Amino acid sequence: GACPPSALVDDTEDVSLDFGNEEELAFRKAKIRHPLATFFHLFFRVSAIVTYVCCDWFSKSFVGCFVTVLLLLSFDFWSVKNVTGRLMVGLRWWNQIDEDGRSHWIFEARKVSTAATEAEARIFWLGLIICPVIWILFFFSTLFSLKLKWLALVIAGISLQAANLYGYILCKMGGESDISRVTASLLSQTVFQTVTDSPPGDVQKPGLRARDSPAL
Image 1 (cartoon, rainbow, N blue to C red):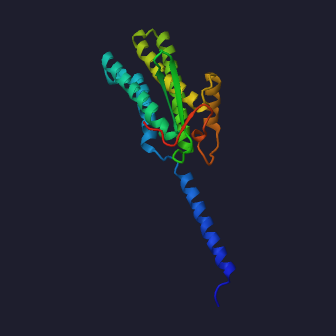
Image 2 (image 1 turned 45 degrees about the vertical axis):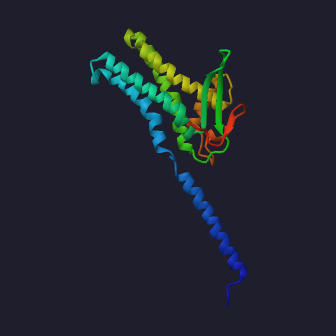
Image 3 (image 1 turned 180 degrees about the horizontal axis):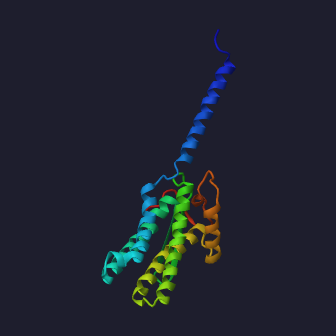
């Protein structure tokens, strides 16, 4: 006796269903799809903070420490603005000046993204928000300790990292201008959000340009 047709159909359906589940589980387990981008998203900004705090241990040269931290901050600004935001959350922003001298903010978001993961999005936003807060604390500690020679460097750190934070928050929220409310909401969502099927950076917001694969 041959197997009944119904049994063959059931076996086929089970195999197909298992394949779909395995594919979904494989995506969920791939917490970090862009390890290199994730690493450099944190490397430059954390290195700048560590170097600033420990520069007296590394070197007695003020100029050497100043230049090293400033270079790390510059590398961080470029990599976050042009690379890690696009790969980790599918967002990109820039500011341009038109012929009349007016400033225009331009925001882009991936219309459909399957590359980013929940873990990458959390790392991206936490690093983007927490590090500028640390530089603000450095600003007040520099004033209170009267180490005014470091003030220009601290202000540069705040300016460069706050620019990326400001640009990406507006990009995520579709150009909303209430930056303090949006930042508080975004931080709470990042810390407490449970894992979902699609990462938070993939939902296109009103006012954004949609691109399937934004270029550098």
